[in-house]
Length: 178
Image (cartoon, rainbow, N blue to C red; front, top):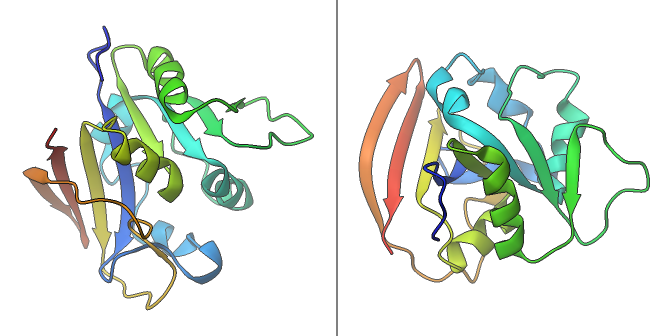
């Protein structure tokens, strides 16, 4: 993706050791047993905006009373059906994925655009819009839930460039080969 911005498009994931980004029923409360905004503060500092899938947004809304300390800049939610009641903290987008990424990337300025949500991330990966994947591997086995990538995603080659450990959490970073 060509853009005047110096920031990157980064898929950001927390993953159980057995490959799930959400537990059964899309539960994600297990994440905050291991990760806070203080775990890897440089990631939050480098993020200028977030593009979030509707399902991830809804899960995050249910959990927001517990964990409100992550500030990744302006939030955009890609959805087919914006909610009846607007959220003053979110811009809802109903466009295609390329336009959504371009819109959120402009808002990120020279910082990174963080992609959250399995379906939105898969769409971005499938269309070659992602520069990096960042994965926090946490020491838990969930056994079931939402896999790192949905079925049907074509092969995507990655190049590892960083791994850092903080407590029991390992952060892995990969460039997406284009």
